[in-house]
Amino acid sequence: MTILITGDDTFCVQSSDTPIVGQKYNLEPADEGTGKQNRLFHPLIMEWYISGCHSYGQCDYEKFRGYIKRDYGAGFESYVYATPEGIKVAHAYIEIPEDYRNPQYAMGRLKSWAAYTKKERKETIDRVISAMIQSGVQTKKFYEIMEGLQNE
Image 1 (tube, rainbow, N blue to C red):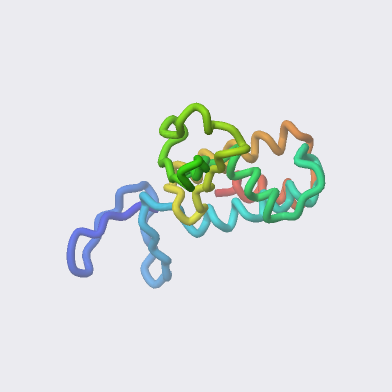
Image 2 (image 1 turned 90 degrees about the vertical axis):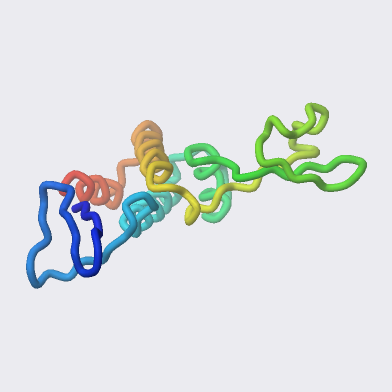
C-alpha cells in the first residue's frame, strides 16, 4: 500500500489497496529501503552461505556477505589507495591514478546495506535470487522464502 501524507492527520491512498479501519500499520518512507527488504536479504544470503552452493571457498559469513555485496550489490562507496605521499581517498575508481589501480595499492569500501536506496536493494535482491537459482540452491528454506515472495 502506498499513501501520501497530505497534512495533519490526512492522507491520500495512491495504490489500489486501501487501509482497513482499526488495523495498525508501520509506515516506512517509500523511497528508502524497507524493513521487509532487510528481512528478505539477510535470510537469503544466509541460506546461500549455508547451502555451500557458491564459489567463494571457505570463508566466514561476514566475509561471504561482503563478497555478495561487492559482486551483486551497489558496490563501493569510496576507495582508499596508498601512494608514496600517504593514504588517499577517492570517491570513484576512475579518480585513482592508474599506477595505483591494483589490489597492492587500492581497496574499496563497500556501501553499507543501510545506505542502499530502495531501488538498489530491490536490484541486489533480484540479482542474488537469480545467482542462487543458477548456482543450484535447492534447500527447503530457500523455497519457503521464494513462496513467501510469490504470495505477496
